[in-house]
Amino acid sequence: MYKTISGKLISLLIIFVLWHISSLLFNKDFFPNTIDTFKALIVLLNEGEIYKHILSSAYRIISGTLLGTLAALPLGLILGWSRKADAYLGNIFNMLYPIPKVVFLPIIIVVMGIGDSPKIFLISLVVFFQLTLTIRDAVRHIPNSIIQSMKALRPSFFQNLIHMILPACILELLTALRGTIGVSTALLFITENFASFTGLGYFITKSMDSRNFCDMYAGILMLALLGVGIYFVLMLLEWKLCPWKHSESISK
Image (cartoon, rainbow, N blue to C red):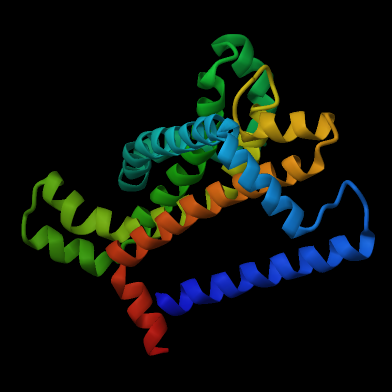
C-alpha cells in the first residue's frame, strides 16, 4: 500500500515539475507557474472565499456518487441473479449506457430547476449506469461451483447475499466506482457553469472571464485534488475490504 501511495506522490511531483518548466518556457500570462499558483491558492484559503466553492462541489459529487451507488446496488443484483429480469431490462440498459449523460442536462435543469438537485442527479445517473452493469456482470460470473456449494447448505436469500453475492461483487464495484470519479468530476465542472453561483466549476470560469489566471489554476488544482481525494478514499476502502487482491499482486 505504501509503495502504491509513494509511487503516486512521485508521479504528482513529476507533473508539478513539468508544469513549472512548461510555464517558464511559454512565459505567458494565461499559463502561470506553480509558485504563483500556490501563492494565489494560499491567499484564497486565507481569505476564506474558496471554501464555500470547495464545500459545494464536494457535497454535489459525494451526494451524487452515494445516490447512484445506492440505486445501482439492488438493481444490479436483481439483473445479475434473475435472467428473466435481465431479459426485460438488460437491453434497455445496454442501449442507454453509451449515450453521454451530459446531453440530458438541459432536460434535467428544466425539470428540476437550477439548484443542487440537477447537478447531483446527473452525477448519480452516470454512477448508476456504470455500477448497475458492473454489478450485474459480476453476479453473472460467480463460479457455478460456488453456487452449487451454497445451494447444498440451503441458505436463505439474505445468507446468499452476505456470504456469496456481495463478496463476489465488492471488488468490481469499487474498481468501477473509482473509474467513475474522473467522469463525475468533469460533469461537476460542466454543471456548475449552468445557472450556478457556487462550486469550483463556477469559480474557475469566473476567474477565467476576469483574466485572473492564477486564481483560475488554483481552482483547477482544488478541483483536481477533490477528485484525487475521493479516488484515494475508494482505494483505501478497496485495500480494507479486498485484501486478497493486493496480497496476490504483492506475491507476484
